[in-house]
Image 1 (cartoon, rainbow, N blue to C red):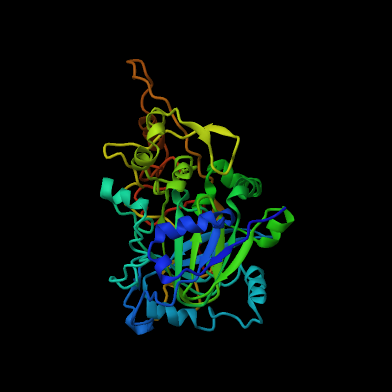
Image 2: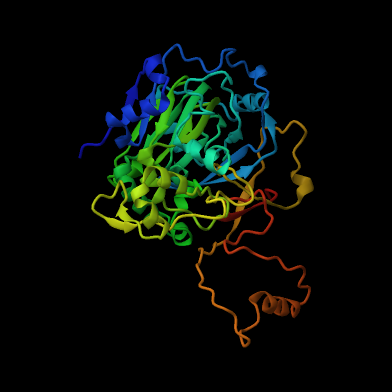
Length: 465
């Protein structure tokens, strides 16, 4: 079987000036078939004139995450534990310390073997999802913070900015920090520019093979799939290239060097890891070709903070012949990567402003820190300098999240049973030392737990006896 290969493009400065047109040219060349492509920008394009002196990058990483990986034989789950804020300079020093520094290696293949061999050891820290940009504001060509694609209609029509989706995010990596297998929110495109530092290794699966990959993941993580059919959107699943080969899942890999751009395409599953300390800038964008992907994207309904964007402004502008049927929930057609399979597009997401994005906070949810239940807090308190030794923790108990359930509501008659909450309170009060009632959301997530995004396992900090 011929596997579409990752293409590398070297545009001239004149070609690079119109980003949307150049993406269209890349797709005419077939770049989208691999799900991932590389752009080597022209030398005239300088995103930051003053360079990258660490002392000049005055940014605080508000929520660095400790990446804890469990699993074996090529199948792993990643849990992200939120740490206290640190400056980029502090992160740089930690990334180059003896504990976290990149090991000696012969070549990239050797480093890749070391990564998968040690993926569950020495949890690295990732400065992910840092809202902002280090590109000069006066850069008008391929400025990641304002690419000028049709995704800008979100701002024009709804006056909403979604951090990391239509604005830039920064990612400060160190050796072994990873991004798990996923496609972009709403199956959008993404752009990732590596400003400086160590390279990144990328893996990608051709969009035409995306459903096969999903079947493999669903079969190996049955419990996760039962709880959420779109669990890959939680960005917690790692599957090694060796396992993909064993199951005949075609994939590509490529190394991104500093100063290079990676483009991911709609429904292109990708994953990867950092070779050492580095800084990348990323965001999402869209084209007219994406609209059908966005309309038929599968959403995670078990988390309340997943990015969901109404397609109304795009269907109305670019698919006027389908607009009325789509509004009525009667839009039959093919998913672009499943030719010949006629399905009904999901009903549109509409509200008073014809848009729904997250709940409470409009923000892309990428790396998801877990809320920690601490024990013997005084004995676990770190010193002022936050020494290299990380707190040791054990998995105490697995909590099964309930799948989201849809209910049909009818008018309540006079003889209807009392509300469930009242019955729960009566039962609770009959227990000795019952304490305070905690209302649980359908997903099993405690209300007002602002730091808890993806609640799959509860990890408790305990003293190492």
